[in-house]
Length: 109
Picture 1 (cartoon, helix red, strand yellow):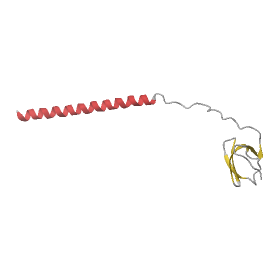
Picture 2 (spheres, rainbow, N blue to C red):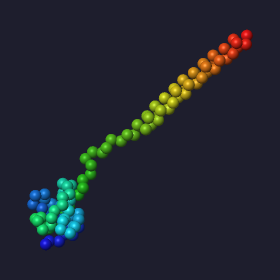
Picture 3 (tube, rainbow, N blue to C red):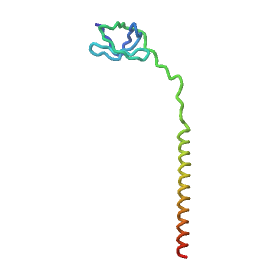
Picture 4 (cartoon, rainbow, N blue to C red):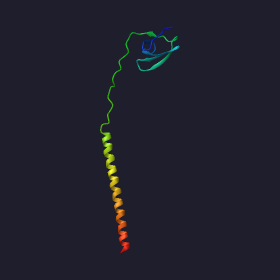
């Protein structure tokens, strides 16, 4: 039975090159270069040691979009809405107070 250390590079005829992730009793788990992990029964797997190094992880092809202005815009919008609501509430309260005052004056006269 072949023994492989964790991190060793191996070649499997169907899936190609990969790195050993774990060795558990009769099983071996391999992370292949196409980023798929597979589990094999060691005595049935046709694994050969490989001296080829692991591929370097390439950087992202394109950076993600950043949302620079959204929080500032959201804050401005919230401020405007709050300001409008406060103005409306103040106007209503003033109207009500004015009506009460006029009724009170009319009732006493």
